Length: 286
Image (cartoon, rainbow, N blue to C red; front, side, top):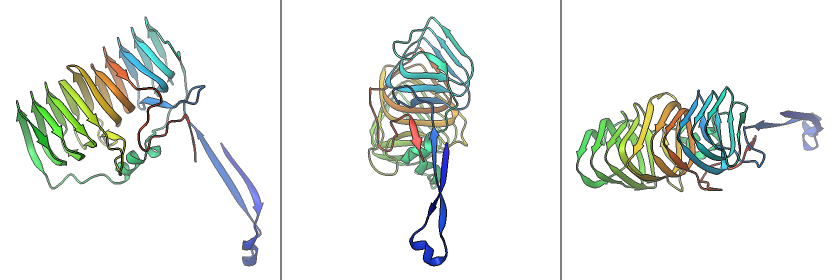
């Protein structure tokens, strides 16, 4: 909605300007009756859930394509899809699925996401190249991780900072711990098999609230399959990629993908949760 009107000028009359047009613009986003905006987005195509449990009582779920729900239990403030909604043997303790309007990418409203989009980190020089860790316990530092990065049967602690992966990150039977970290997946994908992630995003600075960032130029599929419950706090942003999960994740705050496939997954977004730079409302005013 754009509203404009002509208003008389005061001081500018000395320069021959007697009036000017003043305008205000408001942009509506998909939300719910209680004003809660989405925290799970599928911007490109579909949301497919099979035997999934979603607990997001203070925010919503939106698919810009179709939505397939099979044997799911979804507690959310809003559940919407632009295309067809197919429901089979699913329950909805709060909002029920309904047709919604297409959602815009929320990245411009999240300070850290907007910063990374405008200021992509350098992918060279390399801190490590072709890093392969097997049955290793230790600590890694922020930097540029070039070529393939593989962790097998490891327990790895990430020190606070930005980690740039030029060709993705692969973990197998690995526990990955870290506080104040941001993973930037420049190319390829994040693949976790029988792994547990206990990762918190930064609370201050340019990357506040951003845990995983995959630029729009990278449309790779991310696979997160955990061996137990993972504690992930922050935003997962991969707007053109596909996220496939078969895991239990607690404390996710914002998930933005192209497509989402959840199989036997449990996702918990605590009520009224937020992170630095995150808009926790259903509507934006510009």
